[in-house]
Picture 1 (tube, rainbow, N blue to C red):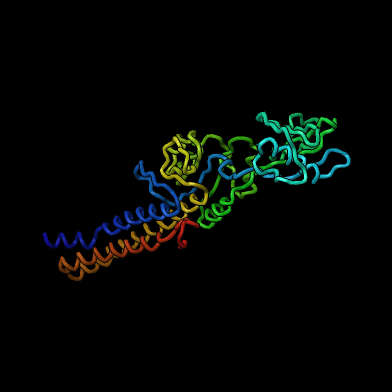
Picture 2 (cartoon, rainbow, N blue to C red):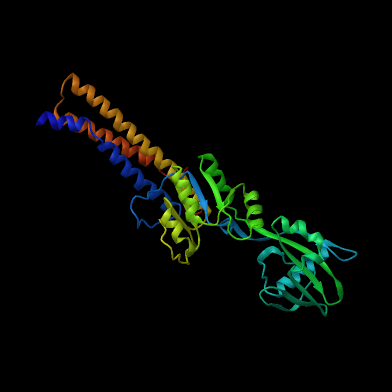
Length: 351
């Protein structure tokens, strides 16, 4: 009986199991330091490196609207003057397009209003309208702007029959997109976005961000298709419609601001794409720690076999060998997943 117990101690998978549990716990701790909330309501969904990181729409990549180009239509046309007029109208109407039109002190407007589509205001007793271009045939020069995925606004005044100018707006990439793309490229994670919404706008935005567009609007079908190929899929979304995708994927990440609530069952809640990048990094480090634990356990078993074949050691020695291997796996997981604190959180970040 004693010899059997010693054999089981010398050749067993316990150090690997301990290393796996430690890697999972330390991965959770690392993403917590990065500002991620670990929901943990579903078992067997640890933080792991995915083969595919799938984004539920291009809106996750955007921060605001920005002015891409100005096309004067009146003669003589002055882009700076027309842009100043548009900025004054937008400011008087409550900046319905955010910071796309930078404020200017050269022109001021009064009696601003916005009806949900068009902004109006008076500048020096003249009424101006700024709103989306609806009759595309009337302005053929706007076609290239539309084909590039821009949102086109038209500025008109009551004084002139000819419109004053066209303004091409486009979504501004969030500053955290580049970091996410870099992390995915570094670790060989495929990064794709579903083609939801305006197809032209999605493709244009994805091209600027160097992200592939998945030609599908069905998240569940896209996830299951990749899983059938053996891929581990992480799905990222910011809306309640992602519930089915969250259930189908291998790791569900909800992107949500602190004060809001996401009525969908996610595994992790991230405040922004920088935190999503931290999840990928933690998953890579966790998988490396697991590989180390398995390697240590295998090496320990090989040594145990040789040791047992050459002469059975005492039970105390066998126990110490198992403890030493397990402690080494614990230390390895802790070191690999150390750091990861979110920038600006009050202490230095450790890589």
